[in-house]
Image 1 (cartoon, one colour):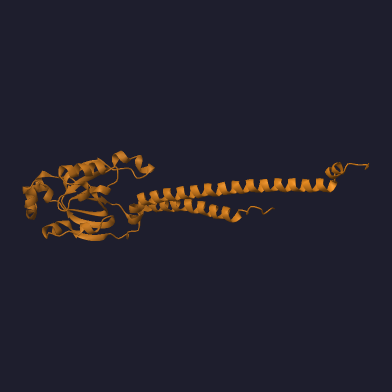
Image 2: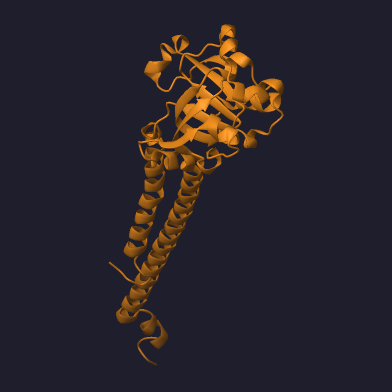
Length: 265
């Protein structure tokens, strides 16, 4: 009878035990690499989602401020649109070809003059905003609402100097005789009535209702507004564009640094 059991001898063979240990270590290493790969993929998809979200947000911000950036790009020297009064008498109009531009107009008739407090444009200006007066008036010659800080006053005694060429406006009750005697010149930003800043929307709507016009059929001139006043919109554009670009850079970096499954360090 043999001295030892062959099956027992085989089960205790140190070479087989060493080989089994190597297989277990290999399996454990594969599991760790697979887990790392899954974590890396999840991180990459998270970065993709963040990048897309930032790009969409930047697009919305840029769309909402595009008009201001467009005005910032306008020349500092206003384009002269001529005398509105002469254009009216000649049955022509140059206003409709210059939306959201830096323009100069003259010959406006200030009707329905309304005094308002000028909106503060900065914290410093807000401290004395109550002392800063502005006016809104409606020029029926080209359906233009004007926001201006020029000191304007309608003196009834000016009726004797009424412009006889605008007698039709007086007859149609679109202007008073003393208003036709005045001629106002403005230089600033020209907008469509339905693009008015939020603080001026109620006034534009009021003028539209009183003249039985739609806001989109009116024009709005922000007297004194210069292209450089819209520099803030350019800064907003730059910040909005940088955010998704930085996220995209980190995404590309994560993809390039991702190790393929099975590559061990």
